[in-house]
Length: 231
Image 1: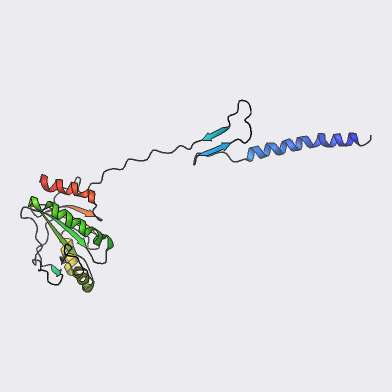
Image 2 (image 1 turned 120 degrees about the horizontal axis):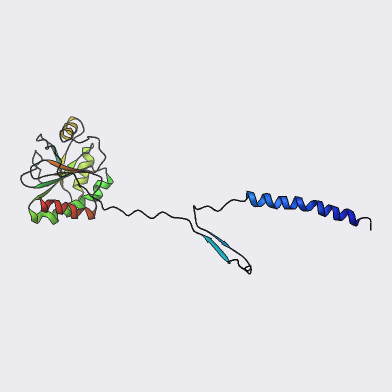
């Protein structure tokens, strides 16, 4: 009988401590964030007035609509550089006819210049695409496609041209490393060290109207065709 009061007192004193522990635990518990969706599923039968599942959905920004790509928007009316009339080196596959010494432009035709190299993977990937563009636009009589190599290794360039299929690229102008390349590109207002591939669109009067960095895509044909047919 003497022990009962002692036990009751001990339990009575422990209750505030347990209550304090529960209070700290709830206070320090991490809050739900909006960074990701969270679902809290209650196990067992739900209590009265309590939903079985509480879902906290993150607020996700709406995806920005992809703007249509444009190669030459706002550029066609700008004053353009004329292409240099200096001699340009050339390269051709075995048995292929050499190109003229001076790169042709103007003459009532739009000229698309593709600057490429045999070591450049995106350049080689887009060559068949560009040749396909040329074939589609040949009927207009107002379009010419010209390739200009920026290779440093003549053997690599020659091997590439020699290995092309019958419908591939068999000849190209070639701006050799050094003063030939630097002088020609600078006279056209271009950076001699620009990443490859890049392109220049020259109008029928021989003026550069548009510079495009990077490889072209199939979807770009519509814009190129529109420019050629509208001017």
